[in-house]
Length: 365
Image (cartoon, rainbow, N blue to C red; front, side, top):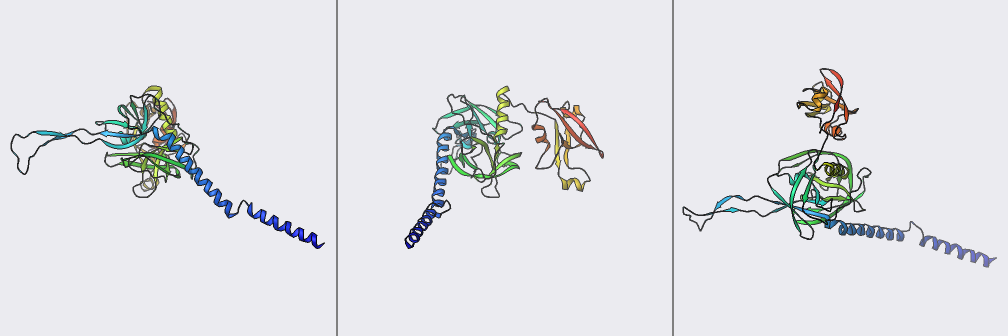
């Protein structure tokens, strides 16, 4: 009997030791899993950079020569001296990425806003190409550059409709206009943000809706570069950074870029739905103070536009588009129009003189 008890005690002790060593929640296993997770993340970043890096380019602005300056010799000068033009060095001003083998490159519109300048693109292998044509999207901070090249490797465009907060992302670009193919990592910090992006040096400001917020470091010069997921797919175009905060950057969702590219490839230009009004958004506070409804206050209606044909007049307040209420920073008139196609009929609810009327407009080009 004592022998059986001793054998049972040994078995119980063995089982306890076995369960401790193979407990899925044991500290040793947790440490191993954490190391595997870190190594896996490092591998993803390394593989993505190797795959994507050659398709990320730097955009160079070739500044025009400044007015001629006198050539001086010593502390004194004489009449009749010669003058020479001052030719500044080209500047690296932004990033972009290849979307077609025959030389189409996507970047931000604000990167190539200067219509008087000449631009070049520089690859990761130091090849330079002159930008032959620039197509600027009138509604988004997007531009498509055309260079005379072949055999370029386009990046794969992902899907930005199913992104989640906390999702791992990688940003690549020419940070500060100097450090090419700089890689930063982070997560998606927020979705559906509305911001006003501006470039004080170019006098550029644009309202951007539904952008991706990320804590991956985005610096001046990163604009136009890709924001990637762990499958090396582009999910956004790095666009803006908060000057007031830290690690707050924004990217245009790639699905908007895909729509832009699809429109461009079909007609070689940006065809966009057009209503034909200029307006100011009345938020709830301003509307209450003036005893008016919140919405888009129409400042002007363009002659012959779809808005005029629909019966919209100056002073109207458009409060709904297709049944959706217009709200500042959430759903504005521009978004209500851009979500449709040329030729679509949209339903407008308009406040005029204390009454609400319904109008229908057929969007033009």
